[in-house]
Image (cartoon, rainbow, N blue to C red):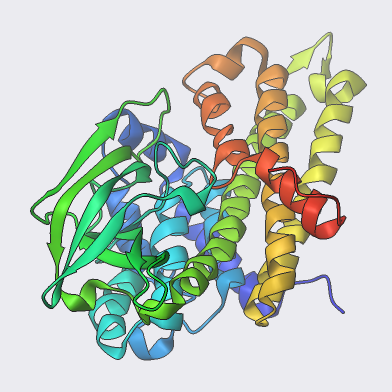
Length: 385
């Protein structure tokens, strides 16, 4: 048993930290405020192999695991440049394609995902389904050799920068007549598909969209992998999603804590730095402890997933996501309190983080649903829903 990361990952972290230092929080906020994506950072990260570090080498990836990709996103976030598309494109879509895609689908999509030249979005959430994925109403039916896909999705990240959307729908089981989950690759410019941006009170370059599909005609090979393993494919992408969400949240917490500690060590009142006062130093110390605990659980979840233990990884990934979401909110809140009025000044970038840090409690699964999972599966308590 070891509680330290391998040298290769430590070196990867150092390289990514140096890389993101050339961009920083000011770059991130400037792009977000102007409505632009982090196109320069994404392209450069792709050229350096950071985006596809978890994907197979034969398709241009780094041959690493989700732990490596999580380390990349944590360092980007700690450097002030978190991006949800790292969670979505290489982690969810790339993982599912690498594990279940046909040879043709892998050849078509994985090299572009790994290089950053192709971005895939992921569409599962629906207005009337919420956290209950069994209530998804987006359906696909056969029309000759093609599929006709209809339905509605909401809060889909990055449709504006994506080449296609991984859409979770349902198809009819020929044997039972029941609907079963299925994943489809839907080009963002497909006729019959319309994306509408959802206005948000978030300062973020990752925009949210509603997706409306009305008999979108798709070729037979738009169906991902084996039509009988749709549910397995879906869950194969959810553990990496939670691990990556935790990595983004812990990185963001580190960024806020670093800002607070730096300010508390330099700002003087009554002849001493304000960090000398326990009213500020103790809350920051508590956040440091909670942050390291969240990082450890995230690394454990990644190690279990990369070892192929999906069941144990599911429990750990949910716990990691919960812990990381909580400490991210606390870190930003305490950082703002430490800086006082400066905590809300645009110069420091913490005011906008108050809203964005809440995402860690809401998405990709709410803290309440994580608690339901732990109560039922970890503690063996009766199901509550």
